[in-house]
Length: 258
Image (cartoon, rainbow, N blue to C red; front, side, top):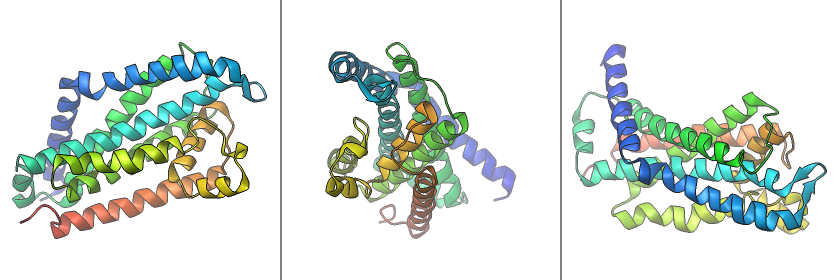
């Protein structure tokens, strides 16, 4: 296929996936808005008011806001591609893509691109909700945007790999339930790792979500527990490794050809 044909194929996948996201918005966009509103009300206003300032000049609810936005981005970018691509396998129309002359990177970019878009839409929705409860200022716009993009890409790629290996719908929910959720809750969303003992602080440094949340928090609030350079190295490194694994699995047809 020439470059024009590749662009047409990529655009077709993107339009199909984006249409799906918007058509079932009550399942793809609304749940995050409701869940995060409850988080802001319960953990931010009710409990956060008793905690006070977690850093000088920064209330707990302001500190919490970037973590909740990133939690929404992670959940949605991962869940979108894992459910959609597994649906393509389950309904067997993935075979039509595999037998077409469309290269693997076009398929991967189409599914990942749509999932990143869903993550960004949800991020904007949760940010808008947070402004009803907090006084978040955008300290570093480029850091904020690049962090949310890289995080969405990393977890969309991880969701793609999950979908490739999944053999039934239960397998799609397995990783988010037993791996993704614990990592997110222990990734500095609700607290600063500087408050932990040295042992648990060291354990936390092995959690990649910690670097994403802190880089995003630096973009919004100007504070971080982690070096920004290390955070970018982790995010870019994960994106490159997961993209290489995804393309290799597509090329070999793992989980796709019987």
